[in-house]
Image (cartoon, rainbow over all chains, first blue to last red; front, side, top):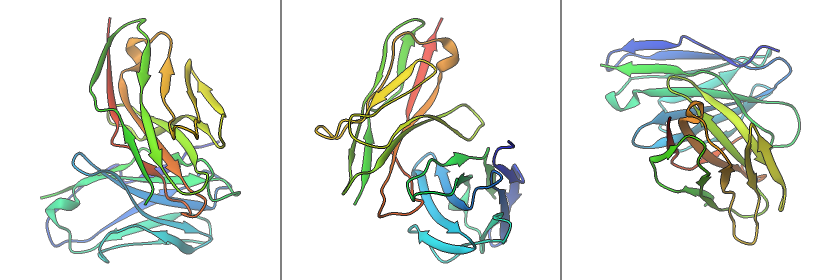
Length: 114
Length: 113
């Protein structure tokens, strides 16, 4: 089975721009979670989607948004980029089952904001 | 709220040494516990997990036991290799917090030949 894929792998943007990141989960997985990883804050939860519905959300400003499509693929969008948004963005998918199922991570998208 | 605390790194060991990375947690209810590993430039790989008290997760020579009485999930390996050099993250997920993994700050392990 193919793993979680994320595109693009690297992005360079300037302040004020917006960006869209994409995540394709493992086949059959319906839950997708997103995380931001920075050296200062570590790994922080952004949001989780299941069957096209956001089920949970972390403490990030409204500039961070996401969605999930009927094929379980997910996108996250960051508008009005700030320097502090530079980070590795990871998505993870979980198989159908309980809410505590194992999450399998993609390789991440490295976003640099100049 | 729920939280995970890991021992601070970096941890530097010689090849074939014994490894322990401490992890303690705070959570309501009965979370599932995980260890993930991250190699440079990569995402997180699941190393092992445990879903209930006294469960032992194991993989590739690594082990961790879910200890509810001490709220701990320490990672151990009897003989580390240079290839084990990476960052290790302890994490939990609670039934009441759908899809949200809570991570410790990560522990960098460097193994020298």
